[in-house]
Length: 309
Image 1 (cartoon, rainbow, N blue to C red):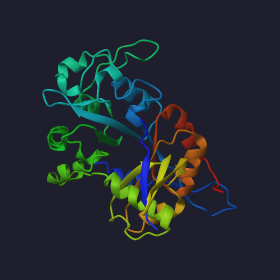
Image 2 (image 1 turned 60 degrees about the horizontal axis):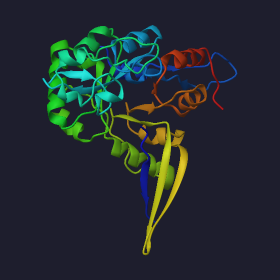
Image 3 (image 1 turned 135 degrees about the horizontal axis):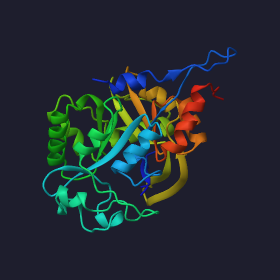
């Protein structure tokens, strides 16, 4: 579900090296313009191509040449990190109740493809199973969905310790509590809080200023487009305006985020060729796409040469 953003207006294999290496130059000798060809990250394993967060989705994304895999993590009743997104199993499976109401073996028998046509079976996999299915040179982004944050962070950290996967994993959450929860593990690479990214994007878009760029080495992710509510406060009350479709990752925003070195930007929900090309010309490092099957051909075509407007 897309949530509307509200702004208050007052009068091993290093993922960093993979993303840093994705710049290319158009073949035309008529222009020396350099642009970034963003990596394609399979959202929930490629939710547009296969049952999301399943081993089927992961294998399909790899077959469609996705550059990285984004997976959603919750904890089972027995404290095992598993892949599932909604709050209730009934949303996508033939079971009901929260993920935390069942053990990992029980979740493996739940059909996470119950609402998909044609009918098939895909159990809810553990994080260990997912990492084993993904080649070591493919980056993985884990989206933390459950609260409280501390137990899940500890369980995920144990898996990354046991599988030696810290070097290829990044950690994301819309809940700022996870930045603090993972601070106990120095090897953890965590996206900056969504609040920090949102606030900086708002400053650039509305105030045309870049007062507090992110620290060197920061990872940031936010939607390429999303609805925007503006709330103006004044003495006698408030006034509200809604803009249905706002692009916040402008070239100016990207420039602000890149004030310091080695800042990496992921544009979320880039699902058509026009948005991919615009994101590339804005200079983002990677896009989060529902369908690698549709988006990797766009990426490959841009690698052959594309001149930004």
